[in-house]
Length: 215
Image 1 (cartoon, rainbow, N blue to C red):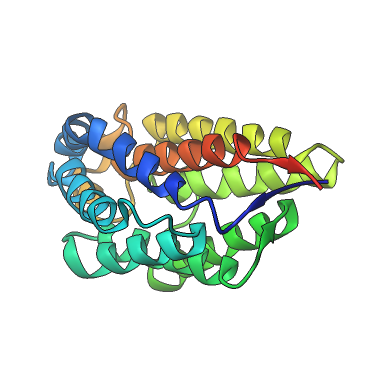
Image 2: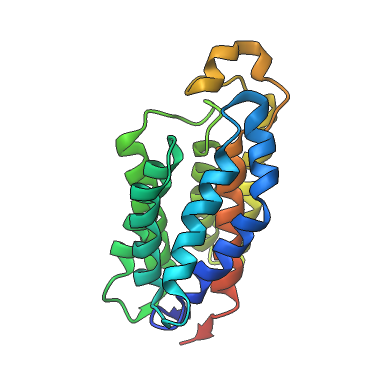
């Protein structure tokens, strides 16, 4: 059975922050086509603040997620701060106090984050939001583990499904948020939230995969 150590994995969040900051202009460009155009700027601000706080601390993954979640909820504007804030807070709380993280616990973490988002938002799959990347990704991870695939293979399935979900938003009409006012004019454009969600899930998957050990 493959597991990774919670205590030494906080650096995953630092890598995640780097990836979001790298994509700041891209995320804002996408968002500017059907939204406020500030998604990348806001995300980079929140993730950057978390990275500054975590640098040199050798944090656990649970602690790093909770730090990130708190900062996103309190320091960045728009709808995404609370949504991603509650997601990362739930991630952290699920892993808190756990020494070894296996695929089952990782799945519980994903579901807790998804439940957190859905508790404060009404979006469903097909509404052209981050949910279109997140739900298929969680389902793919669970299906992979249920079929006997390794933790590493399930992480690959998670990232691949998140990216397919992101791409599916091109063909969707926005039903929630500012973009919903555009109606059919929102067709043909990626959703910024689904794009950042796919980035986040891919980076977490890569970080966890590199730390897996056989128990």
